[in-house]
Image 1 (spheres, one colour):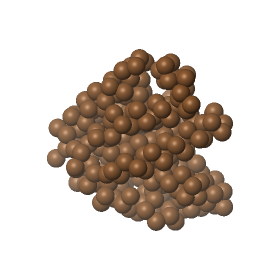
Image 2 (cartoon, helix red, strand yellow):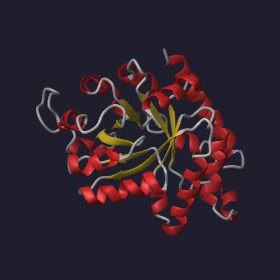
Image 3 (cartoon, helix red, strand yellow):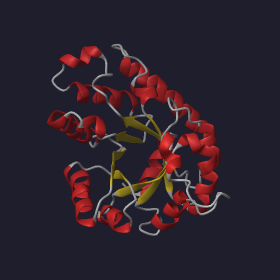
Image 4 (tube, one colour):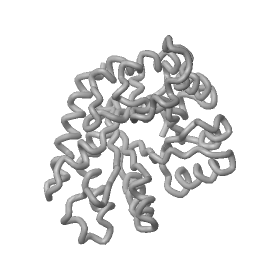
Length: 272
């Protein structure tokens, strides 16, 4: 999916909502466990209930890989189903890959060719040659981890000077933005650090930012928009648990739809 196609989707749906399919077999409604593939049945119901409000879906591969072959099959079925939706939604493999060049090439083939995802999250710690292979696939995106919301983020990401200049996450933004372009690269910035989007935008004014942490993790949608939106919108805001597990009963899909619609309505008001 191209950048302009993504922007068109956002404007048509009046939404920049990404739904994280962090589908934990221990948390999905119990009545689904009798299904042949409970996780896929759960995902399909969530997708069917929310696809008119969401422009993107982001399976976190850990929840699938942890289940071995059965989990990988659930992931394959999920991405195959997502790729049947019209108009097409943007699909992100939240895999956080990044290794020496030939290894990254194999990861890219797995997620871009075998599974047909539009994008993959990547860790930039090993530098340009670990990220560049993901940028060699036409119409595909690398989403680079820049500033995360976890407790340990301060261990490294803010190292550097104490005047909020040239900190490590800023060096990542400055270096990595030159490896690709705003047509094939995005960056991850956690919503619980929304005010820092001011600094982030100084480095990457034209790039899309994937923002996790809105909803169950406490991030503010209004602050993310205030500090992070650019002239082309430039935001994908992710919500996972707040939508997926809005209900643990047989009405789980309806409850997920309600929560997704609520976020979409807020987004529609915030879009210019």
